Length: 398
Image (cartoon, rainbow, N blue to C red; front, side):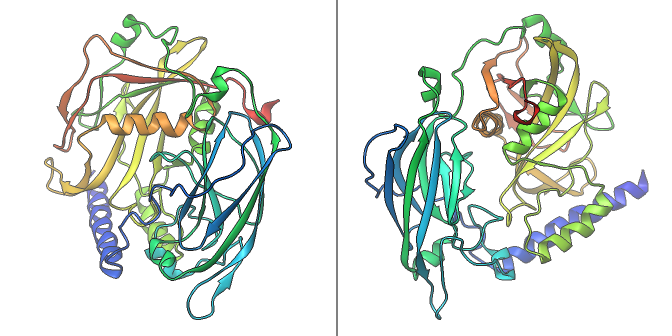
């Protein structure tokens, strides 16, 4: 136990050190460079039938352009781009952008694994919307209904000096599903979930605990699905599994930072529900901020079934910085006390994949509205629990 505490202590110190290095290296690196609301400047032609098309100009001086195209679930597009963008000192590139360099570690880009300056797109404009790479061409099928935005994978600093732009052509290959459900943005409508009864909710602990049994974060989401469906939903929503040991992670963390790769798998502590550690940990974060700020959660398979499938319990929190661990005076992550925001972040990111077939919120008989984590941090909630029913069959299982 003493050895583990020493490792944990070193881990906490390294977290602060690396975060400090990033902040000191780039004073503006932690600004929301790629999260600007897309500008409404495009005016495409009307029509959403198969064979119709849109043509849109994407100037280099903007990060995002609102196409004003409202997609239906299942609508399939062919997106092609041409043109040239010019940066100072003679650098110019096409829709695929150019390879990222070590300097890009200090900037945030909407698509972390895309080329610098590449054409990108996004369905919806909310905080949980996931940008994706377009490049020179892409066939894209909308998983849910939403408004389409086009952008350039660059920082706000780049837009001040960039010249030129890209011309985008969007052809509708398939108009998508019919019916009211296909036009619902961000996933299915709220509904009562069959099988989630008051008796069942009473059996599920309101909170998880640390190794000493001290109560911590609240259980704020339930998933109905097989293990494969749970993992598939999170990974499709670009949550990353966190399952490395602390010792290995310390080394990989330094290496990945040097290599400018996004580092989401900085370790989570082991916490307990149903008297056992989490089955999975997942993280979702901005690359530069990951050591101080990330969305993360833990998942446990419960001993219960709903609708003939396993019921999974989720405790999700949002790290927003560091604070003193009141148990041992070590440094630990500070969570956002408005914990319901993270519950809805899970809701939005998973629902927008198209893999959620039903969703709703329930209030248990003894709702948790205020509490402290095992490390001493306070949080508050409206007491509701999110319930998501996952798609029964994986696409590649057909």
